[in-house]
Amino acid sequence: QVQLVESGGGLVQPGGSLRLSCAASGSIFSSHTMGWYRQAPGEQRELVAGITSGGSTNYADSVKGRFTISRDNAKNMVYLQMNNLKPEDTAVYYCNVEENRWGRLYNYWGQGTQVTVSS
Image (cartoon, rainbow, N blue to C red; front, side, top):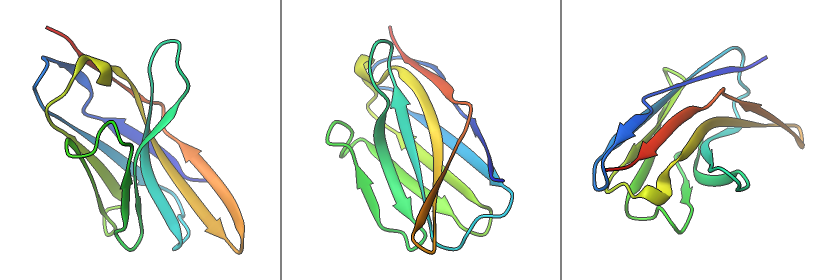
């Protein structure tokens, strides 16, 4: 079983920055992707950014150029640097790990951390 714990959320003014961290524990298969999702009130959960074990990244169009995802494989941690935050970024952010074990996918989720962008 993989356990994920997020931290770094909070209240920030528009144009400000915030850095989210996610610590993973347990046995994680070598082939896996770590990522960040978010869910705003009344909306579906959406992928914000993802990063593979090899370092390949992808981002939602709405955050490209503003957010940066990174990981530390030795520490089993993933980060999300959020710059130039907008009110539309307000949501609960969730850390995710997806394993690929011999063609089967396994997903694990954190509890989420609230990010509020408001003046």
